[in-house]
Length: 119
Image 1 (tube, rainbow, N blue to C red):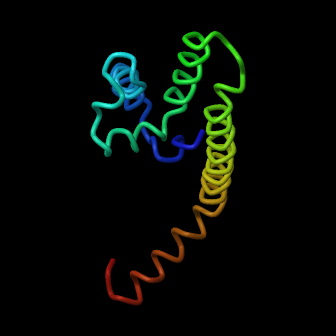
Image 2: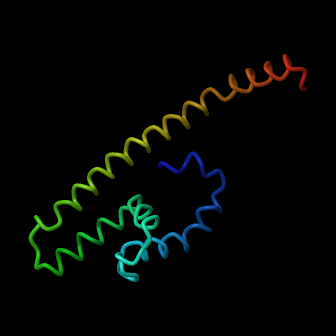
């Protein structure tokens, strides 16, 4: 929902679909050791929810299963959910506002061009 205003063509999603899961798979630390990743990739992995979910599942299954082990990861996932919800609502509101005021924006743009002498 957050990216929908920025994706203008449906075909772009089908191009991203095979690439993004592979990248997120490596960033979770399953296919590649997490401690061997450069800091840039570690920080980039924080934008994907799969990083925290995978770490929580691994720590629960490896440690024998108390939820207090995964408490920090669950807090991060909850915070990330709230942030993404806020951004998604903002993006959808902005997209609807622009669609609703599109004609007015075109008129203002044309008026500004006429004042500058651009046709």
